[in-house]
Structure formats: C-alpha cells, structure tokens
Image (cartoon, rainbow, N blue to C red; front, side, top):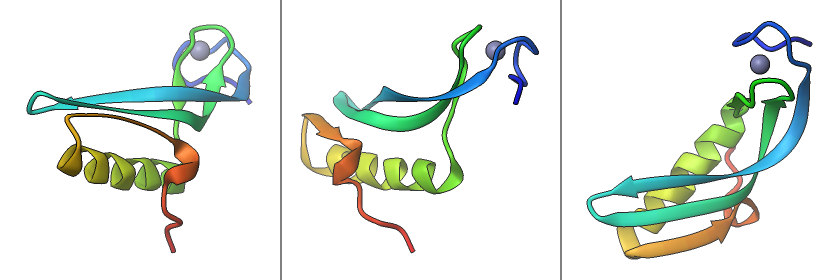
Length: 78
Ligand SMILES: [Zn+2]
C-alpha cells in the first residue's frame, strides 16, 4: 500500500495524539490508531475511529477547559 499524498511512502500503522481547540478550550486525545506514511508523515483515520474521536472531543469540549484523554476512553460506536 502506497501513500496517496506523496506517492512514495509505505503506509504503516501507528498511534498519534490529536489536538482540537474551540472557543478557548483545548482537548487532546492520545494514542489514536492511525495509518501513517513513513515518508511524508501524512496520517489517516479509519471511518469508525474518526467517529469515536469526534464524539470524544465533543464530550471533552462540552465539559472541560483543558482535557486530555486516551483513545481507549472513546465509546464504542455501533
Ligand atoms: Zn507520503
């Protein structure tokens, strides 16, 4: 499997944090499973993973000014 972005890199599985800032609030989700290009560093989230991460960010940004949670806190999505 080759990278769509640079056309060179091999895609490998990795874990990355993601940061979202909204209305003066900051939320970080760590250890998100991603597919990552070894060459250019582009990374992609799987559809179901992206939905879980979005839900988790919505929770965090609704309640805390600053929040850090691991991806394993995300709720399972049917
Ligand atoms: Zn690439």
